[in-house]
Length: 208
Image (cartoon, rainbow, N blue to C red):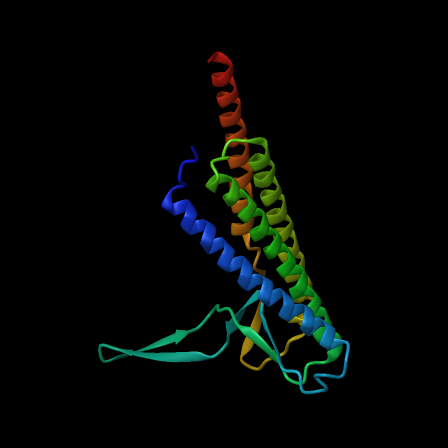
């Protein structure tokens, strides 16, 4: 008799399906966008926005009036988005390809996670297939981390260092997204915990 999976697992399962469906629609839109970049569809009016992978330092002083006192303040570090007016097509192609590669990593992560959740939902938790899925998930996330680091450093050296503003300076510290690597290492450790659980289950079956 098949036992019903816990409510939390079923919620995660359906939530994963919704996210994967949305990612699929976004992927189609990004693919179409990349195809249109190689036509004259956008012309010279393409307005591109991109997140700056480095922090910006404000050079303008401000004033804070608090409890009847004027306090001199300065915004020192902040994240920002950059807007390219009439974005050159060659630059748009680079960003389009970068977005497509990043999205492929994310879709692969969600697809692998969905396969893992399906196994858990069907009561197949401690098996070799799930262990392989967890390891694959850790490897893909590590690849995503390497990709984001490479993208951030490339953006910094080829674009951020060439930006010129009157009251803003670009920080030399790029975002490393270390949390992605930490999650990947946690999943990798979890896979080895599953291996230990599988061995204990096999020993128990042999004992019986």
